[in-house]
Length: 175
Length: 290
Image (cartoon, rainbow over all chains, first blue to last red; front, side):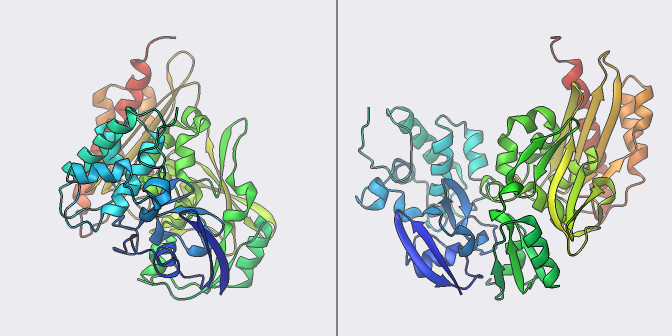
């Protein structure tokens, strides 16, 4: 057993874990946040995508011991004030509005992949969006509305006067 | 989809990592983990010890020497893709990196890890073979260098010493005037390719082709270079490119599998190699004169 200390959505979670525990299982079972979905558990589907140090990564392909002392943002921390305000992020809101989901199983991964894209690329092309979600499988939507949702979110973020950052309050208007 | 249990070590120096590797015959090096962790999850690999090299500082460096760009074993693919020095001096690698996995796997996966893993369809291994990269392993305190063209011997098989730890991969810098091309065919974007091809033409200052390198991947057990030296005697017209590639590709052994027949792979690889050569040629010929 190895002691790890991982900052999940701004809250430090410390636990003794087996080295084989994936970050996915750490988030779900140790931190108790079930919004990160386990799909294939071997890096094909992208359902378990979270942000580690700001990069979208597959949490089933990272061991908890590798993420020791690092910052993780899961779907619960994407909304305003790292999820505490109860308000959706611009990306989440756009997914609702554009009907970017049906069953919703892939959605947490899609939202985080989109958040990572928009944090680096404020004005993405449709090609950029498709590239960003190319590792995320959705079996319902056919992707068209997901791409629309991300483009809508990009458009809204472009018309705001601050840079996108997951976890920022929805109604924040910085100068 | 849960790995068997194993021990985990986090060495601080490359020599410490080598000692750990030598102390346990069933130990594996963990770099980015984007190939190893799926294998652990599916229990295709059952190591008793994982040695995480992410905390060895020297391994994260990209260094330019007079002739090469040396990429440390822990340099992530996303970092390599965004490094201007690599875009400038190894443009072929930059082009290939866009096809490697997806953004989330590139954020974790390493250039060196892809080479050590030696997947037959790996783009990075193809570029290493095409350009004749130098692969450095640390074994028992000494550095041993391997030529990429002789490094890969089968699917997931290399001549790397079992108790050696990959330190860096040196890719030769291009000449001042150089054209490159990279193409692959995959069932979906960034998926395992069914066939891939890379080409680089180095020109001398007068605009004549000095060296021509072409490699094909994903069609056999490991990436291989095509012998296209005949092209140096030509003016790189389409007919001679097609004829030379057609002859050269007959030497390459291709494999059948569930996804594509050997014959299909060979045909597609030849087509991609021609396209890659044409792109490399046109990049220079059609570029505005500076």
